[in-house]
Image 1 (tube, one colour):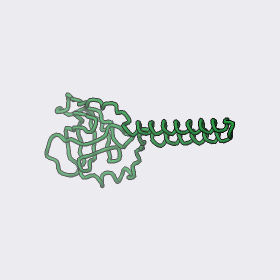
Image 2 (image 1 turned 120 degrees about the horizontal axis):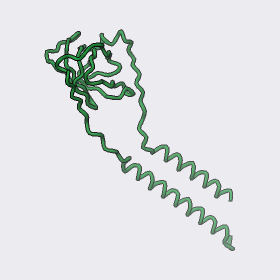
Image 3 (image 1 turned 90 degrees about the vertical axis):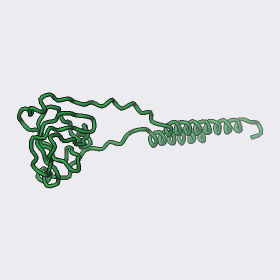
Length: 174
C-alpha cells in the first residue's frame, strides 16, 4: 500500500511538473525606459513634428510639418512602431499632432513622443487609418502534442507497474 501511494505521489508530481514545463504560455515583458526624458532628444537621430495620417499594427505614417533634428525632405514619414505600450510601443491616433523622436526609422514609448495641441494640417485633414488583418489563432504546435503523448505513456507505465505489483502481492506463491 505504501508503494502504491509513493508511486501515485511521484506520478502526480512528475505530471504537474511536465505540464508547467511545456505549457504554451508566452513570456510577458513589461516596458521599462532606461533614459530620462531630457536624454531622449540627444539619442534621437530624427525629431519631427507632424500629424498622423495612417496607423497600422507595426507602423505609422506622419505628415511632416517641421524637422527639429536631422534631415528630411519628404512631406510624409513612415516609422516602425508597435501599437502596444506594454512592450514599449505607442498607441498613435490618426489625425492627431505629435512631436516624434526616431532612431533608425523606429519610434516608441521610450524614444520620446509628445502629443501636441492644435488642429491637423490641411494634408492630414482626412486621415486614412490602415488596419491589418487579425493574426490567425495559433495552435500550440507539435511539441504540446508530444508532451501529452509522453504524459500518457508515463501514466500507462505507472498503472502497469502498480497492476503487476498488486497481482504479485496477491498471488499465493508470494
